[in-house]
Image (cartoon, rainbow, N blue to C red; front, side, top):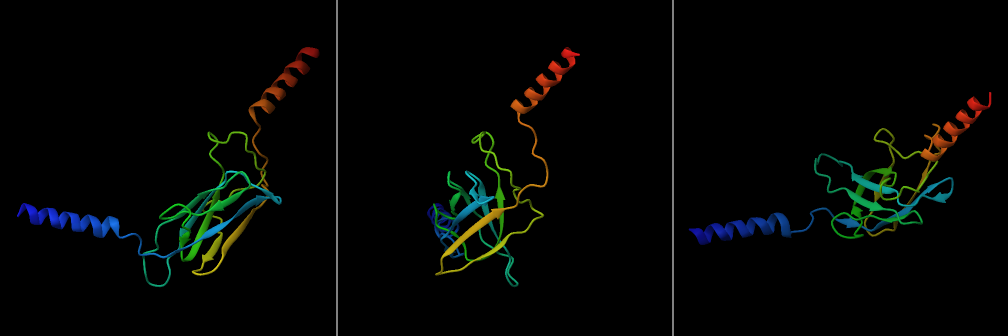
Length: 159
């Protein structure tokens, strides 16, 4: 009985964990730009959308852009691409802790803004995402805040 339990357990592990993916993927690459210039270290997410009656969509793909704003999506393995089908794409800023000097005057898309693309099997899936220039004024940096504070103190003491 114990032997049979072990066989059933191992078979279950292989069926659930060793089988790979039921969703085919295709290579996906591209570039993120702002005002025509590459956005270094942005994060790009490819979220599969439901198609037809199926509630199953596959796993989300992800990439970190390199210093030239280029990305290669990984889903089930390194740079294997994204699930074939339609996707909603999210472009997020680089992690501030990892890349504190990266500044971008463009607006990264939120969950309310929709960027949709289709990943096709057997075709070149290369996308360029040109971010719009932000309409909001960017928050001041610590150096800018200190300079303003110093100018205000100098102005107040000179009167």
